[in-house]
Image (cartoon, rainbow, N blue to C red):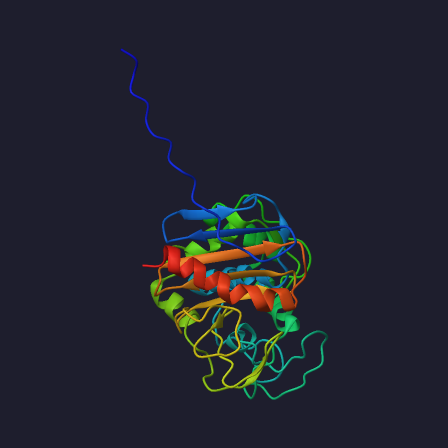
Length: 278
């Protein structure tokens, strides 16, 4: 008698993405990846998705007592907390200070480069070595390339970003109290420009991550919880974490951020939440 054959389990159907360029997408809960499409190991430019990696390295240093969020850093009166929350007054790029400390939310690459220099001095390690020892090894990242600016120069894969997303969903490298602080609004009520989406009032951020709250327009979905946080990059990349849904998702692609992303990302997020959210 021939052995009974098991029915073939159908592959998880793709989530429609209305884009005519190469891209990859991944979804994970706190324990495991639940969906990918495209090549999850392909390395792409992360652009500003470099910032959450750098921020996690800074938070690990805080958790280990090497850095304090109230350490002076940057312009007179600014601290590590201000740098992480984009309230130190720096311009987007360059050394110009264009606002008073704590007065406005001014999104700044410079702030993260100043943060990196502070981390190097406080830890006694070059930043790439510190991130390698703490974030890369701590999360088992396999594809990330820590080159260029800590604000926007790194490269990585969907599988690496999902590992980072899982850490941001349920932390293992920092304490729960510090995680709650990092994902809570810092300097509430500040207005500012969300790049690509215009002025937001308030423009809420945590420590190295943007917090959705009630922002409109926004790059996450209409079904995203107000607690959703994350980041997107000008390379056409995003990573969001929705604690209410218990999910994290990331998108990487071959086309730089533009109107196509503004159009498709909210619906894509809503489709992910509808299929995989709890």
